[in-house]
Image 1 (cartoon, rainbow, N blue to C red):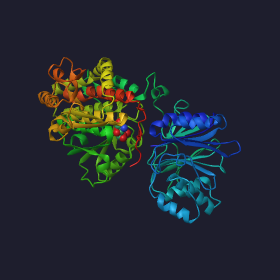
Image 2: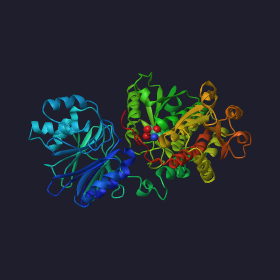
Image 3: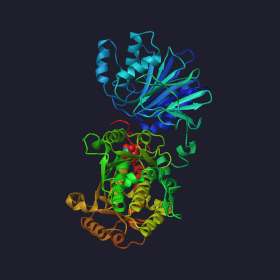
Image 4: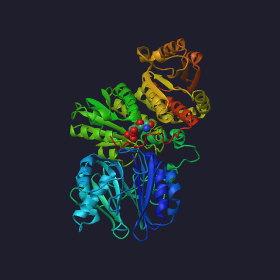
Length: 617
Ligand code: M6R
């Protein structure tokens, strides 16, 4: 949800900012802007509706004109994407400039107050209100330092934000602050970077300070970094951390899109998720996060899983896993519903929060609520040191590596891997899983990365050909049973978010309760039908679809004959335990969505209206 980047040092600030914005474009991409501090201290600003490429087209001449600058790539909240609503926004006196990620909830009240004091506004944004509030404090008390004015203004607003602010009268200073939206400061040799995540500066430095909630920092080459609490102005010692990823991991590496690269990374990312945790030869699952709290997890009266989007689908599969192997009752909730419905939660509950980004605002708010109600919160996050990772009581990283494509792929299979490990571990510990079954499961889980590789190698061409047949479809139905019902939901989400084709996921047995009315010769139905669980029931579902002339794309096990004989198209995956079958089934579903979207000319990495981390409610 909006990307912020800033730089002060000896390099060309324009290049650092523009390249940084390209890396942050996954966060939002409906408009972009850059501001540079010129040698005389004055600002030079260019901003436009559209992507960073549009910004470059109107700002190239700024190359090599400045050593300090900042930029923004936007995901609209207040006001449509337009040149006027693009960031940076400048105060009425033209001296203060701001870029902002998040929402100022009380902007309207402040705007009215400022209008009554003759301030005027050019945009519809909440951001322009904040920058004028900073000016207001400086107008009111001219002796105020820039940092104090920013602090005073931030103490008046509520909502969620990360901001970066410059002032013409305070050249060389960048002020950043965060409450609810992430912000990292990169520390180089005689240079500083600021960004919504570390990707814009990882090629220049491996040292970063992640700004904590409610903190602000004044950054300058002369005085270094001064971190304070926004509320009390208490000085805080910066905690420098080492970045644990490299440039290669955030580049496309020869693939046409990040999404395709990330799909093909899954044999490795799943292996990375299991590395050091699944020790088959020793017959153990070793997970620090779980180990330290094993008794608490094992004795939980109930587990509540909270998440959004794809992570929520992973949570649904987590429910099947935990209930089957650990025999602990599980409820899975959309974080956005949980947080607003006064749920019954107590200290006897364990809450598992799942989030790739670790920044999702709804999930974060749901965690806060669960903690307030006394629950122990266990986080499953991909982004190391993210807000959720730091705010939860304990947790496990998925270690899938940076996921840049807006459509979540490798993070999903990594989440399923972690949830499998947790469920099997608890089940074994609490005696529900005997040694033999435990060994069978972990041996099979250990084989999953190889099987994913096999799927990728064997189905890519077939899926591409199938995709070409359905490029003009208007609707899709995805069906699955048991563990593969949530996989069907995920398949449908993948297709709709990147191809803009309407798609719905259903438990296959629910088809007869309504969706069957949609089936005719024009309806493609993707059915996940491995030979496990209730295979015979799935066979009947396929018969019901064919009787109504629906077009069946079936995901079956190698050598399947029954479903294969009826389906219009088949995609074969290897056999595995039922509980791991969603991991294998997800691969062709991701590829199908990808190839259909590419054939339709859609921007798969940056689908319309979406953003990678949803830091607004
Ligand atoms: O970062 P999170 O896992 O918390 O994100 C949750 C959803 O916003 C995310 O999964 C979204 O649904 C993706 N675009 C799905 O591909």
